[in-house]
Length: 137
Image (cartoon, rainbow, N blue to C red; front, side, top):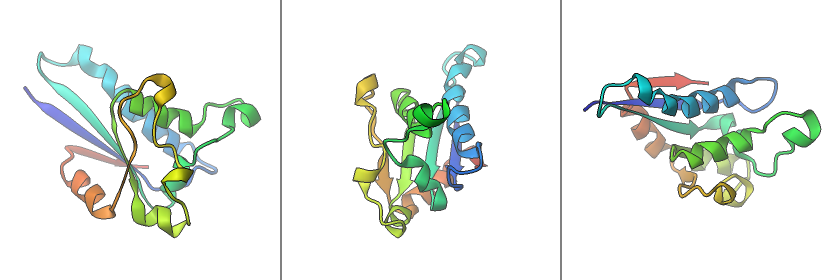
């Protein structure tokens, strides 16, 4: 039984680029590969928001209302529904004057049991070291 660990690190703000949402889309879609795996093999995905990337986690986004697009917020919630590990850098939140109250923390309305974890950068660095494949967005 082998586990392939994928790490997605979002460093870019949610403006003028699809990259942050693509990181979430790839992490979510990585969970559908089970039909191609040998019995007992797994693929796990962790997502970390660091630097300007923490701005993607702001709650109450109005992307659908204003632009007719699904929001990054809804992608984060779908990640939680799939029990993906979503980390947000505590130091970078503080740098922007944000707290846990300003960001998406859970997806209770979808029945998700997992929550976003606000952690020190040291924990994110440790997570990155444990990955088989690390992608930066």
